[in-house]
Image: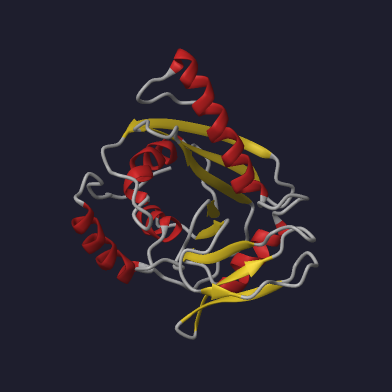
Length: 236
């Protein structure tokens, strides 16, 4: 994928927060992704106490969700683990993985928040601005706001609210399994984001794009931990 100019990630936390506040003005929390024929999931994995970040992108044909491409990259980070600023740890490795992706996904799913973030710029929104692609945040827990528990049936939803504003949707992707928390990343509206998450959920809590990315990221991390670690290694 071609990626327009990014920004430095090795910032002090206070500088990172100021950058988030500037970038959130570029987020487009609405839009139509159009005809979707290819989706992707992105995730990062690292061992506690280790500064090597392993990032992957998995592209899947839509709607059958057959995996068509997998890429990975690893970088060393100096940015500390701070909730709300995780993009500054994971971003460089993710950017490198996307650069290696030959596919051109119509929508990208991220394991994390979109606009449901203290400064409105979770990883799905931040990366969406940098990639200039429709993106969706699919998180396993709330970072800000509140949400009622959806009904137990698959497809049930409940709004995520912050100061009376809907910032996402709690979505039951599998009956009687904990919901996921879906928020707009960039260039897509919440209705389409929820519809895509539900249509991409095939019997598991996580939709296939982020589920496949999560599995692959852990595989890459384990394999490189057995002596295959490099600062960057493509896998296709």
